[in-house]
Length: 149
Ligand SMILES: [Fe+2]
Image (cartoon, rainbow, N blue to C red; front, side, top):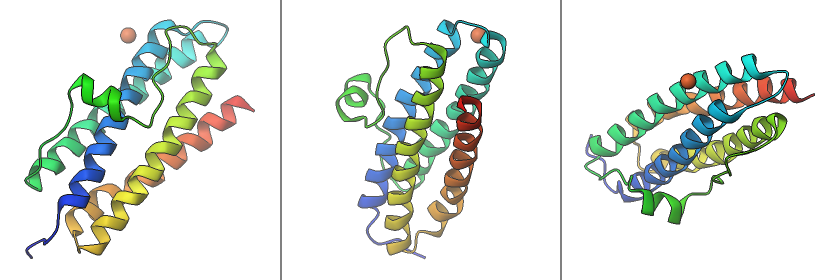
């Protein structure tokens, strides 16, 4: 089936790509700089999360290409357009975890908007890939919030 107006879907995908890349960089930073009694747990968890994020980033970019779009990934463009906050080098461990929860909320909203656009044009391929993103991010947030309580 010919997908008619892919522009809005590609735009939402690019926004997701930009937000995920800031999130990824935050996760690396947290992995390196986390300190305190939960160092071993969090250092490893943050690595697991940035590895997952890296796979997502590639999947998002390649979906953009499959829809004949151009993935936007320059650092200038990322910094100018991200909705996920870019954090400073040093944060307290719990702040790192709640920063990830906040970023996940932004990503969930972003994916939600993407799915709505994809639904409007009957873009089954995009719906198929990204529907699971929301569940995964929500599950992550449940676990991260359990850690914080
Ligand atoms: Fe490492």
